[in-house]
Image 1 (cartoon, rainbow, N blue to C red):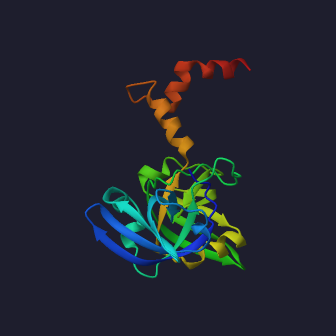
Image 2 (spheres, one colour):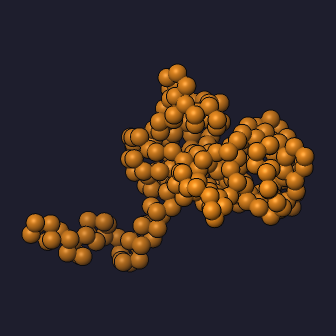
Image 3 (tube, rainbow, N blue to C red):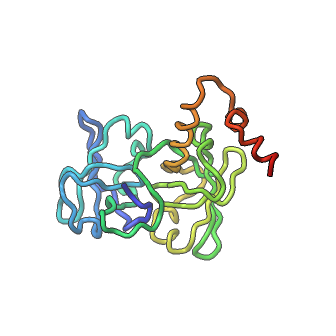
Length: 219
């Protein structure tokens, strides 16, 4: 489990294909502290397992399914990535629950900067946008952000100076791909609602069947 608060920026130094998928060597400093083989590290929001540790970085393995679902397939030598170690049991929780299980890829539609802050608009596909609500949480490249607005398939997030400066968002441009993880709560709610009906009655139908429309009329 992660918080969506990026600890440092790392640099991809090597990408090696293997039977399992791809092995990435990431140059880093801060996340090496107390890092052990077998630990999980979120790399641009993708939870990967550490398989070796060097003096200036670590190697992490990605399986093919994860590669295809995320921006890992675009990683090359020199790519700058967001890094976060898994949250410790006694650590502070400052963002939102981020699993590191990327749901899909978004495309940056626009980047507007005002000083060191700014707003970024990202286009999502139909499978992702249905889980997003205004003022709700979303992880973009592993960063915990709040959705400022939604227009069709386009979401906009406001980025404060420290987040813009200390993550790879300051490097992003229109047309760039980013990893998206929607709020876990939204997926659980969908699962919960689907379990109440085998036919497609929609949320309004469910509310009426549960009698909440009548309760509202009585108020």
